[in-house]
Amino acid sequence: MTAFFEGATGAEEALVDVADGATVLVGGFGMAGMPVDLIDALIRQGATDLTVVSNNAGNGDTGLAALLAKGRVRKVVCSFPRQSDSWVFDGLYRDGRIELDVVPQGNLAERMRAAGAGIGAFFCPTGVGTPLAEGKETREIDGRTYVLEYPIKGDVALIGAHRADRAGNLVYRKTARNFGPVMATAATTVVAQVSDVVDTGELDPEAVVTPGIYVDRVVSR
Amino acid sequence: MTLTKDEMAALVARDIAPGSFVNLGIGQPTTVADHLDAGSGVVLHTENGMLGMGPAATGDAVDHDLTNAGKVPVTELPGAAYFHHADSFAMMRGGHLDVCVLGAFQVSAAGDLANWHTGAPDAIPAVGGAMDLAIGAKQVLVMMTLFAKDGSPKLVPACTYPLTGLGCVDRVYTDLAVFDITPDGVRVRETFGITTDELAARLDVDITE
Image 1 (cartoon, rainbow over the protein chains, first blue to last red):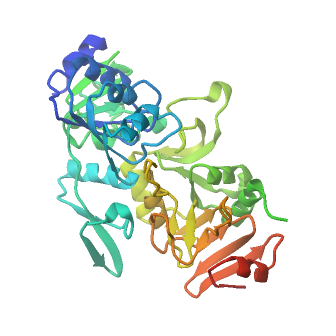
Image 2 (image 1 turned 120 degrees about the vertical axis):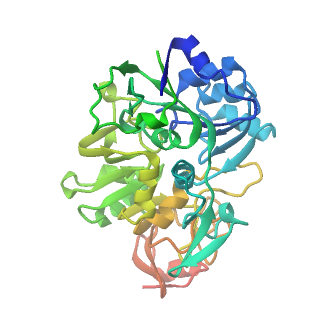
C-alpha cells in the first residue's frame, strides 16, 4: 500500500527512516525531474554519510547541490558531474571531500533496471577498452566483447513524478520522466514527489508509467 | 578555404539520410539540427528520453520539464515520444539509432574515439552518454577541428587521451577535410583549402584518396 503525505512536514515524515550511510537514488536529469522538495526534507531530516546515485552531481545551489553543500554525501555515483553550474560538487571534489564513481549513463540506468528486475549481473558492450571497464570481467559473445556489470540497488529512491492516484500509480511529464521509472523499481523504499494526487480510477491505466506496486510513499505539495 | 563550424555542421546535415533516427551530442554536434531540412523526416533522439525533439524553446514555449541532453529547453514535434532512461539507452545499445554525431579530442586511424576526459590530474571526469552512443549507434560521425590549439593533429595513429570507445568511428568531419575510417585505412572524402598531399605531410596517419 502506498502511503500519502502532504507539504514540507509530510515530506519529512516520508523520509523519517532514511539512515546514515544509506544509498539514495535521486531522480532527475539536471533539474528536470529533480525531487527538490524531497531533497530539502532530507536535508532537514539530517541523514549523513550518504551515497547518492544520480545522473548529475547537482546544479546551482538547490536540490542535490544543497545536500552536497551540507556535507551529507560521502560518495556520488553519476555519469556527468561536471557542468557549467556544478560548482558545489566541483569544490568538494577538488578539496578531496567527496568520492566520485563515474558510470556511463546507459550503464547507470541499466544497472538500476537490473536491480529492480532481479538480474544478478549482465554483459554490456559499453566501455569496452576504456578506463571505466578496467579490472572488470569481460566475455566475448558472438565475436563481440562485453563487460560484466552489476546491479545498483538503493535503500531509498527519491523521484519526481507529475501526478499520482490513490493507488500509487505515477505518470510523468515530458523529459522529466528520465530516471524516475527505473529508480522506482530499484530501491527498498521509494518516495515520489508529485504535483498533485487524483482519485483512484482517474489515471488512464494505459498511460500509467510507474505502477503503484513500486511506490511506497507519495508526497504532494 | 577551411570550413567554419557552421559549414561543418551543414556538411554533416547534408550526409544524414532522410528518415534517419539521429542523436546529436552536446556542444558543436547540436548545431547540426539547424541545418537539417524540415522535409527530410530525420527524427532527433535525445538521451534524456525523447524522440521527435524540436528546436530550442524560446519565450513562452520554455518548459523546464522539456530539455535536451545539454539541459537546454527544447520543443516537441508532432509524433514525439517520451520514454525513461533505460529505454533511451537500450535504443542506442540495441542498434536502433541510425546515426550519432559526437565531438572528439582525438580519433585514431582505427576509429578509436577519445572525447570524454583529458586525463589531466585536476580534470573532473564526466562521461554522460558518450560511451553508450559511441558503441550503440549504427553510424558514428565525429565533428572536430583537425588540429588542436597547440597545432597537434587530432586524427592520430593511437589515441593518447582516455578512450570512449574502440573502433567505433565511421567518419570524421573537420575544418580541413572529411575522412572515412575504413577497414583498409583512412580515406579522404573531400578537402577544404588544402590538398591531400599537404594534409598527409601534416598527419602521422596514412591517408589515401
